[in-house]
Length: 231
Image (tube, rainbow, N blue to C red; front, side, top):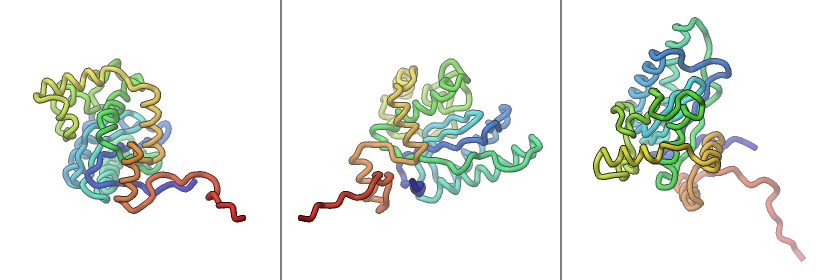
């Protein structure tokens, strides 16, 4: 089946994943994570991208972002790579890319899936055995959302602000929500959408998205079109 062109919708949340080459860690020490986050923050400001959640892992990175236009997200990811990859190659005496192909993204129905995707991303380190709980991993946005420490990379989405009238209420509500992992069904629907580049939302959301963007947003159904019988 042909791959659909990447779909980027201005001011709509997107779940982005970029994988590392097999066997090549993206980050080897704290300085690598810090350098990447500095470039991520600069790129977000330059190309007007709001970063709502993130997790940097040794084999991949996940972002939950809202771009201001259709082109900025791709330009920002490309710019980060053009800075981080040469930095990494010089430091570790290697050559070539770090990435396993192009980045993947899924447009998110915010009302139904934004907070769920945020929890999915911030629980990745626990799922990967890198921490016992989300707050124990320093290279994600969880600390911002749970009130452990401010994170200048993060721009909280309005749906996060709706969790409470005060920072304390929002942080505690979010921490309670994020205390356990998603169900297997929830994990499957998030992973399937982002890896295949499909939008994640209700049927109405997908139909409205297709009408708004005037393009196909889901793969065509398999098989030949049904032909009416002619008597």
